[in-house]
Image (cartoon, rainbow, N blue to C red; front, side):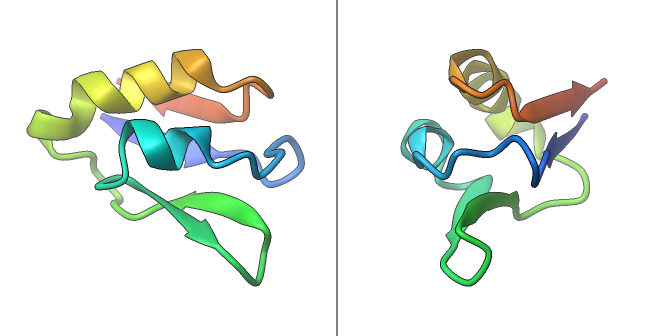
Length: 64
């Protein structure tokens, strides 16, 4: 599974960082969250999907 944060849509509210800090990191220079993995480790898939579902800006895209 892969995840991507849309730079133009991310509001920088850091909700994804709170839901799954192992996958999402806040980039202070870009003022947005970034995904720390090319391929999401299996143990983080459920929380990565939860972060995508809870993203108020719908900025996280999941590719299975």
